[in-house]
Image 1 (cartoon, rainbow, N blue to C red):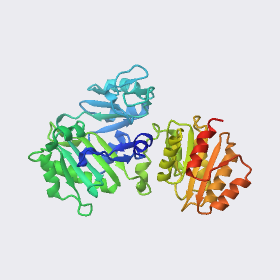
Image 2 (cartoon, rainbow, N blue to C red):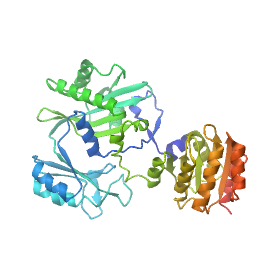
Image 3 (cartoon, rainbow, N blue to C red):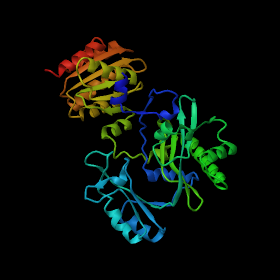
Image 4 (tube, rainbow, N blue to C red):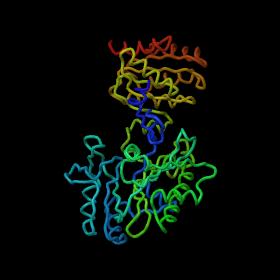
Length: 425
């Protein structure tokens, strides 16, 4: 099961510097993805000091930029959700997704070679990612870089601040090689961060003199934002000291609690879905949890645990699951239809296995949804169904009386066996 959790369901490592052992913990990828420019805008709205910046999407934005945005040196960054932009290249041959210039007349030429073209880096697909936005920002004269992060930590049962005077680099390497440069500060979520605690952290980050209070102010503003936006992580790397004696958040990675979307609609409206699997985007619209895999047996299951077990038993019998699809406990007939649409949109799917244990969900609703979906989509691939639990007899009756070509399974293992066997016919 651990291997499936790690490899098949796209789980990410929780920062190991917070653990006291060599064991690895995993967390599910958050659905909300913000571009760097949107993260900076959010920081700015909460009074955090960031460099001046503008977002360019078209020629009109660029013309306004040249007249209104005057700085000594410009940083031009292609906005995609991938690292390695500076060393990347575009499909038109233009090198680098990050550029510096002091000449405002060069902005148009650089931006035009980015917007509307695909940027290829080590972290993108082979054909790259289409750049729709470019951030033009004021270059910061960096004297020193530090690392600052607030995140929810299971071991601490709440938020923890992780800080290091060695910023601008991989924080896990810092933790491994120089652990004395990592400071961890558990925070009582009800008491918050006091001025005294903020200044203590600022001093650990090696800010001195008047910069201590400036850094403490940034820390308090970041904490305010963390609470206000229902964040689970606010990482500033680097939080810099400039040559002019200012404290500025140069880059940010922010993750949010998906369950708080109803409170944070303005933020979730910025979700960047263009780089996501379109099937995952469609699933999210219908409140379905979907992760595409490389196999050929489509799985429709209620409950994440049952979904994982279904994937495992399919592999045990020599098959390969094509996806993780959890329809949840409050599934409706319409959601079943959308689930089938998503499953059948994958040309690799050669068989579908429905494995439902009705607890909160009524097997009758699932059965009606299966019948409607099968008829409306004119399903052409084998369909194996295993139903158990609440109102199961009515559910089985609905399926049998539908006249559809459905293979029924008496139990979990038989369902997997039949799904795998259907591929050989």
